[in-house]
Each structure stands twice: as structure tokens, then as C-alpha cells.
Image 1 (cartoon, rainbow, N blue to C red):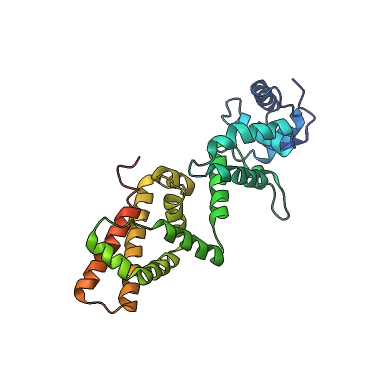
Image 2: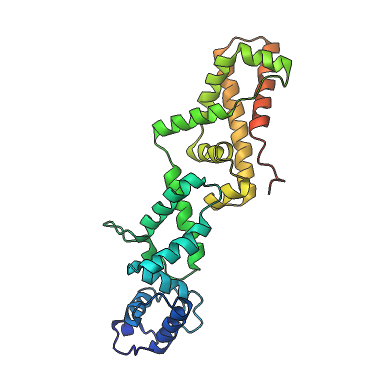
Amino acid sequence: MVAASGSSWKGAQLDPTVVGALHHRAQRRWPELQLPLGAFGEYLAERSAAFTADADCPHADDLYLACCCLHGISVAIRVLENDYLDRLLPPSVRETNRDDLRQAVLERLLSAQAPRQARLADYAGRASLRNWLRVVARRVQLNMMRKSPSESVRDAEELLERFVVPLGRDPELDCVRQRYAREFKEAFRQALRALDPRSTLVLKMHTVQGARGRDIAAVFGVRRATVVRWMAEIRRELFRTTQAHVRQSLRLSSAEFRSIVRLLRSEMDTNLSGLRETDD
């Protein structure tokens, strides 16, 4: 073991013997990752207020890996990408988008752009690196999914195409749907555009990407029951807003309006029935 007595991190009051033991333990786990003891000691010293620097430090190996990555050791970066990130990417991400998300997360973790340092440098060992990375990946994914106004309009159009119920389920509703197809579509378009960004994102993940409740919950860092509640709120809001637009744009008899309300409920039940309390 390399002596640590002359290292510049002694001022942080880290026990050189403990640092040496942690360094040795990490190198036993990853013998292919060779990082000088002094560099690891300095890294620990900068984060010494965040963790207990003793021989039982639970996340010392994670700190060592992070330190190696920040020093540009290519083998360490491959370990981070293959053994950590690939297992953390939410299952709701389509395979075609996984590479984009992986690259965006890696760039955020390792690229320093003034005045912002590389995000991985913020890892201080308070929790496991895997759990910490899960939060970072979730935030990067949400940032990627947030849209400009023009993209939000395209999202509404994409969702609108998904909300199509085949004819033949109910002759009365089919008649109403065909007679007022243009007005109904426009009312529903306006309702979709009126959703807040989170609701639009949740609805798109569920309807377009086919994400299940637990997948959406993992992205937002909430319980699955919360996502079920969000979906119920989205359903009510779409129903209320579409109904209001239809009533405003059409002069309907009471019987026709009741048929419109039945049609709306049928559309919502068909398209938003994928998240129920029993969906696990």
C-alpha cells in the first residue's frame, strides 16, 4: 500500500490508514481501475463532510469509481455506462431512444461547462452511486421530454391520432361520431392542448409509449398510486374541457348533447383504461 503521509489532503483530518484501506478495497473490487492513492485521498477530502470516513464506509467503492471517471479513465467510464446506467434507464424508454438518453446522461455526468462542473463531481457518497444516478437519469429524461410550444402542439396532434375508437361499438354513438366528427375532433384537440406539461407528458408516456404505471412513477420519482390519481385527473379534465368546447361550438338538442356526453365517456374509458389500481 502506498504511504499517504505526504498527501495534500491531510488537512481534512482523514486518517491516512483508513484512506489507504478504502483505496485498497476499491482496487480489489476493480483491479482494472488504477488510480493513485493521492488522487483518491483528495477526492475523499473534498467530500469528507458528507460521509463517515472509516474502514466501514459503505459507498467508498462508488466514490472510487466516480473519482476514476472524473479523471477520465476510460475503463471506469465503460463500467459506469454498462454496469450502472444501462440497468437504470427506465423501461418506459423506447429502445430507439435509449442511446440518446444514455448519451445525454453521460454528457451531463462527465462534461464540465462553465460555470457548471461535471454533475458526477457532486456525488458525495451519502447514498449508493446507483441510487444517485437513478435520480440524475430521471431528471435528464424529464428535461429531454419537456417541449417547446410548437412541440407541444405536435404532441397534441400525436395524442389525437391515438384517441380513435373504431366504429361498430354502439350504433347511436357511431351516428353521433360521424355527424359531428370534425367538431368533436377540434374540441378534443383544444382539450389536449390545454393540459399542463406534466399531464401531457404522462398521457403521452402512457398512450403513445405504452408505459405502465410503475414505469411512469419511476421517471417522476413518485408512487404508482400517484400516477393512477394523475391519470384520473387527466381523464376528468379532458372530459370537462372537451364537453365545454362541444357545447360552445354546437347547438344541440338535449338528446343530442346527452349522446355527446355518452360518446365522450366511451372515448375516455376506451383510451384511458390502461392504468387501474390492479395494474402492477
